Length: 127
Image (cartoon, rainbow, N blue to C red; front, side, top):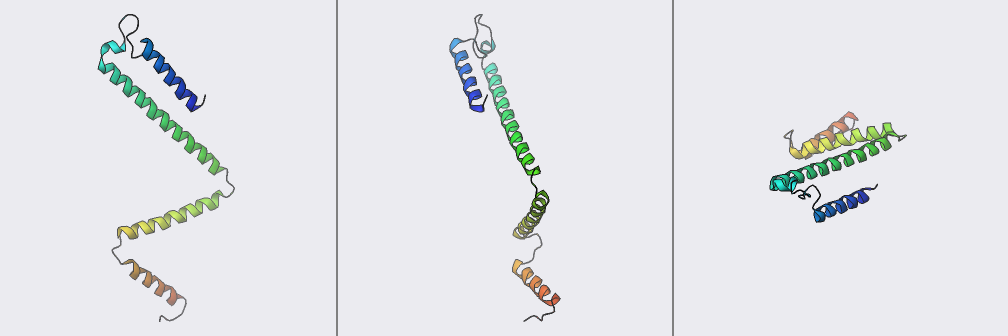
């Protein structure tokens, strides 16, 4: 059953229970039931339904993530993909620390110093 069919089925069941009075919120034929307990039972039912909805959403996201992970594991270029990912994360980390000003130096001064060091290591004099 697809998710839409499941939602439609649950909605139809809820509507039938509400109109007949025999569902979890109805009083039933004897006048005793969860609705007879008052608003506390309705609140408990709402919390239960909300918790079930959150759990369903979490499981759906977990299922999708597992499917994506399986697809990634089947790739022939997994090693290159991981290497590129590590390089990308390192670059992002450098940019984030520069933005945050962790080292306290001016970015342009640091880049100029690195360029001068690179030129000097190549044996060319600085201009």
